[in-house]
Image (tube, rainbow, N blue to C red; front, side, top):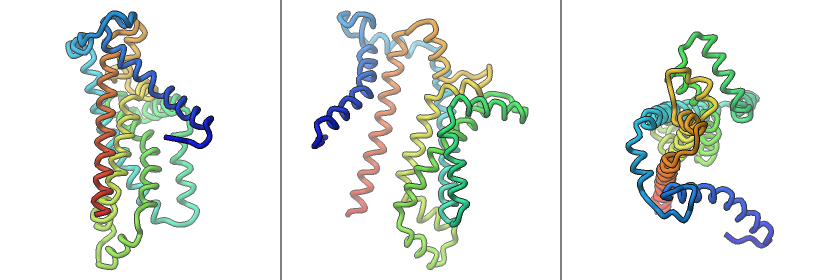
Length: 261
């Protein structure tokens, strides 16, 4: 990417370096024989040893299950909220949008503490279900604004034509609106899953004593010392995230080519 102003170009590439150099260094560390000595040579034993560590598989499975359920719930709430508010005019939608954006602006530690107090007030047992609900309530705000932008790009004449042909509002949503915003739904789901998967503070407040997610497990291990297996685990997580993003981008590109054809 080129910029006319060299200072803008320098700042851009400096920002890119600050974002990606730590990830590249972490990947480099995952394959070193001795992570403290870069001249020690390369090995795959840390990745192999990672698969022989049962202590990490339980928290990893918990994080995946919580991420899938909370992302699905957040996408459902955020999409329905965006579609519903888009059909309302007047002062109400801006007021509700201000309330929706609050979980994004409020510090996460305050959100986690407030959710903990709410669950204790309702006498809910802290565990798997409370973490799913907490993650969904936090990430639904991000999903909402993504879907609002997707709905703005949607041609309203398609929905109007469907209703003129006798389609009910629910049929318009399932057969016209939803198929055209599927890329946005997938992107929002991926974002919500990522927010849930790597969340620490909200999980710390709402998981209780009987549930351990992967970030909580990594935190407990980091208090003892940096383990080479954690570098291997981070490398695998980076690969999975990269694959999901590439899959989403390729699907969006193929959809654009179909629409152009």
